[in-house]
Length: 406
Image 1 (cartoon, helix red, strand yellow):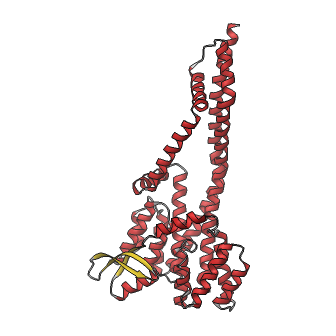
Image 2 (cartoon, rainbow, N blue to C red; image 1 turned 60 degrees about the vertical axis):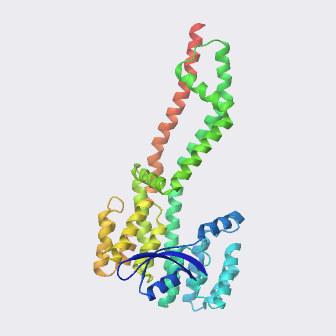
Image 3 (cartoon, rainbow, N blue to C red; image 1 turned 90 degrees about the horizontal axis):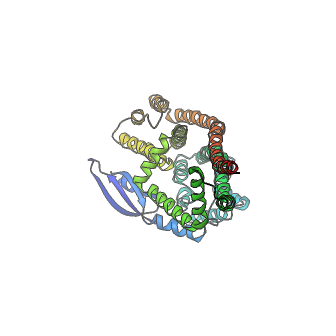
């Protein structure tokens, strides 16, 4: 049993808070629904403390790779559609998986199912392995009797999200390696090369120009006060990281990211693709609309896109169309997104329309990430050229001064 803190709305519109012991959030929803109330928001008490304890025990030992989760959903769905029982299919997966932790988790799930729990209830006991969208789609599949198809759709959704994330990381790898290499080379130059040259200039009493004095100052600071510089840098970085994690800092940081040329547009399309595919998968699997939107809000990372989804959930509870909310926030979700959602609502095929939107933006992001290295390369060349030019001028100018005195 878990302890939930929740916010619910009575039939008359009054919103109230409460606490309850329930097996999972599905049971919480059912209890409130049976009493005539509507769940607005919930959280499991002490869930953060539990996750911190789990991480401190050993993150590498208690972690399941995304590919293992994708294969778990895909293979389980295939075996169920082939006619295997759930227990037998889980037994096969337990034997064939290479992940030790997943093997342990599957074993516990099998014991829970034998004890009378449903598959989704057993999955919900492992929130660090199976996300809320995973549990919800499995639960919907159990209710509709179409578990194998829901698992197939889930595996496709997870695979698409994973591939999209991997492509973005890959596109950022090249510039990251170049910048890190530049920083390492610069530090080595400041520590070992520049002091030797400066000693020569000092012994010959050469007057140093302003740029050379800047280089000398940086070199002396790194060489003599390296630990202090490193500590100050870590303090500033840690403070910024702490601030960005706070709601106020996160909003400022996410707003800045959206304003960055090229990156901002990419972030917008990534969030649109992730929202469309997640909503499509959940709605197509039979998950309730409001719950689908609330789950999608946990998948989207940027707080401004979360805000739009939360407003859409509130609008649906009032009887409005969610496309209306997306149409009002085109600076976050593109106009095309709202138009396709509106068509889906009119035709009763919202999940199909959203799937088309997801594919469109995923293909666009894929193309943009391929072109990103080509776009970033000129900026890197300019940056490297400026750094090398500044260093060269700083070192060559005193040499000319020295030669003029000979």
